[in-house]
Image (cartoon, rainbow, N blue to C red):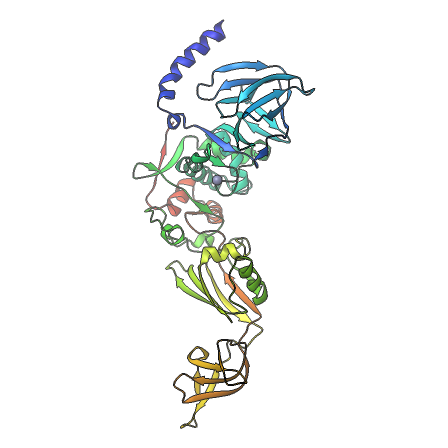
Amino acid sequence: MKKFILLIISFILLIPYISFGATQNGTYLNVKIGNNINISENISLSADNGFYLYDKNSKREITYIENNHLIAKGNQNGIIEIYDQSYNYITEISGDGSVILGSGNTRDSIVQVDQNKYRDYITFLVRNNEILLLNHIELDNYLYGVLPREIPASSPIEALKAQAIASRSYTMANINKHINEGYNLCDKVHCQVYGAYDNENPATNQAVDETKGTYAYYDGKIIDATFHSTSGGYTEDSSNVWGNSVPYLVAVEDEFSANTPNSNWTVEITARELKDKLLSSGVDIGDIIEIQLLDITEANRVQKLKIKGTKGEHILSSSNFRNLVGASFLKSTWFNVSTTGASSNTKVYALSGDSTVPREMNLDDAYILNDANKSTVSRDIVSRAIGKDRTSSLDGKSSSKPTTFVFNGKGYGHGVGMSQYGAIEMAKQGYNYEDIIKHYYKDVELINEN
Ligand SMILES: [Zn+2]
């Protein structure tokens, strides 16, 4: 009876929050976990001490199921049917995410879905014969599962605390990222990597606990606290990466990241591999001759580049180029490029008809003639070139096709906001989490909402 009265009271207390809508209920998130599941597949659920079903918004208890192992399965009407392990029907719940399922332990509810354990609650969205599995979870419980996947748990505690504040602020600033799909955040790098209960670590949990309720603010709003692995020595301005100018996401000199893992790297790609990657993305410019870096930002990063081929050229943004060749291969857009294995850097000299002094000729300013004296754009094998003013010419053979492009670069990631390895280095040098946050996010303040 006492419990019943308590439930009634808590329900009444929650009513004003419910009427404000989801944002007032903001300490709970719906995080999509894993990939979509076909409606005909069985989902295995386990918990100690059975399960409770609750109304999502009020957290009001609907029913108790004493089984420790359940099977959930969708039906064609978009309903989730719940069975026991012997396929005896127990109950059904709506496929709109309005009913949540928690363990029979009201403190520290842990629900196991197939092989993975989740804190708080599980719920289901049925869409087009697929089930989206959601973890309905309190903000800091979510952060417990994020931190160890986003930063090494062995990092100094002040770096972990800076990461906790960055991740907490980022989460709230991006809470509507997937709202049109019916949930708040995904569990992938697109939002933040969420490893859930099994990936938790005492050190990262401590960092979450010791910063509880603390957010970074700018101008009265929680900041979009983006972060990356390492800046390589200089962070980047948001406008150069995403096209939006954000006053606290500006480029800062970052000596703390100058000597970190991946602060300097070299990778190579052959002209052939690059040609194939372009072809598979639908771009055919023939054999690759040259890569030109077009715009370089003040923070040293390449904005745009031009790839020249025997059949044409292709201009693309450096982030699209990173995606083309692989973002873990080309670790950042801070790089220069050189070539090996060919004579593309060989200077070509020609004699004009009225001079005995050779002059340097840029092949771009020349007509390239093949053996039949026909003009061709191919600079592959040059038998003869003639200046566009027709006064100079070159005979002989020259290959201008490189075999390999070599990229020397700095940093890992987009470079905007906090450098995680920079944060670790700052902590090692004795800076605290507030120093770290304020170094990477310009003119922000930390506010504790507890
Ligand atoms: Zn996402």
